[in-house]
Image: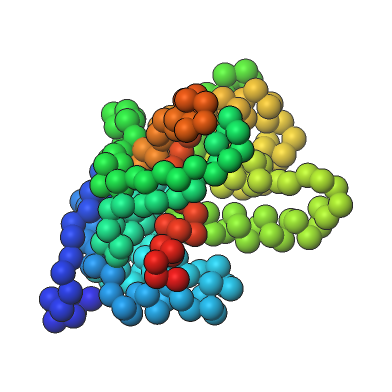
Length: 260
């Protein structure tokens, strides 16, 4: 973005959960920070665009609009970092308070909760596992002992998964099953037994990956993925019971009731 245009709006520097360690050096995100501009009425136009909402790309367009550096491509952003950008954008647009209705698991009644978004921190992860500038990890599946290489997904790959799942849904109509787990694993796995051909990887996931290994891998993936920590302790107003949950990001997140 030209300097002139940059200077027109106040901006904030936001730290990324990945600390930039999984991006190549030439990528501006390798600094571990991103500059975002405050939302304006122009961004509100994006949020209220029926066309963008119907296409399911309204939030993509919003985040692209607030990222200052034109060299930063949203498609290249890791999902955990994208979550941090989304939360920072909400704070810069509508403030730190986020009020949402949550279903009480004890009674199924709705309970209002208000969160201070500025208090959301990053997950604790072992950064020593990150090889500077390389989004690639090694893991041995515990049951089968098969060594694999995998990567963390980016926004681009998340969109590709969504497209594939929609396409697969048409063919599996009436079967009552989905292919979400295997589709995601195929995107994550880079190689199996040192073989990085997509045919080998896809065949392994479809026909040879044990459920025990699939579960263990997904738990490991969550453990090492840098992200924001959205967990909180919900206390029921009705029973006083405590439940660990994640802060829900529903329509109220970018569409507060007062401005719809």
